Image (cartoon, rainbow, N blue to C red; front, side, top):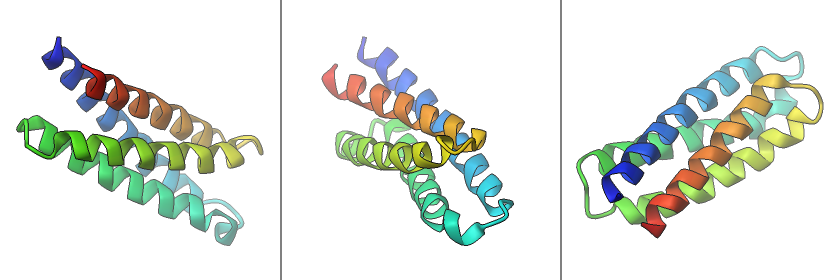
Length: 113
């Protein structure tokens, strides 16, 4: 059961990394990039934390749980920021927020196992 949760968490983190990179790249192509600064920064930070979480979880590292907790916080913050822009019609932000919420949920499930 735990191994399945770890696998699902790793997959959700990897999906989140891809969504965050896509979102940041799309935000950079927006007309008002200055308006997107916080979103871009949050995307990059979230992707970096998710990548670190994947690496440590993949080796069943001793800090997996701690990184999952940080990953949850980063994903929720990124989802909150992206949802602000998604409400203005930015689909890349909507997709990123969804991936971040799924990742946070997967990390929560992994910690509960």
